Image (spheres, rainbow, N blue to C red):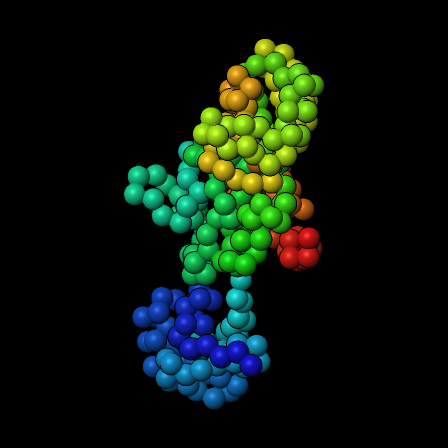
Length: 239
C-alpha cells in the first residue's frame, strides 16, 4: 500500500501549486472516499482511495512519458542560464511531474527526444551496457564509401583517444554531400559529429529518428510533443 501526502498528490496532478491546493483543502473542497479532508498532510492511498477536488475526480499518475520533436536552437536540459530549454515547451500539467530529457541532443540537432520522470527507464535507455540503439539521419559534407561502413562496425578512435562502441552506418546517398543513417549505442558528447569528423568530413544536419523501439512521430512539428501510447510505453519497458 503506497501512501502520499494529499497536497503533494494534488499538486503533482496539476490541480494547482502546493500553496493553492493547501487552500483548497482547507476550504473543504477535497473529499477522500466521500469524506471531507482539511489536512494537507493527510496520507492517501494513491492506488485505491477516491480523491475528488472541486467535484472532479483526481486520477493519480506517477510517471509521464512524452515524445518531442526537438527543434533546432533549444537545449535538452531542465534549465539553462542562457538558452531556452525543451522543458519550457511543456504545459504546466506535465511540468508538475518534474520531467527531464532522456539524454541530450545538441542545441543544433533536431528530432526524437523522450521526456519522462521515470529515472530507472532513463538510466536503462542511456546505459551502454543495455545496448539501446539511437539512430540519426545525417547530412554530411563529404563522400561516404563502403569502407566507412566497416570502420563504423569496428568502432572509431576519436580525437581524445576514446574508441567508440561498434556502430552502424547506412549510406543512403553518396557524393559531395552524402546522406546516411547512423546508429550508436552510447551518447558521448557530440559523438556522431566527432565520429564523422574522424573520417575527415563534417555533419551539416543531424536529426534523431529512433531510440530503441521508438520512432519519431513524423506528424509532430518541431517543438510539438505528445504522450507515448500504451503500446510504446510497453515496448520501452519490456524491450
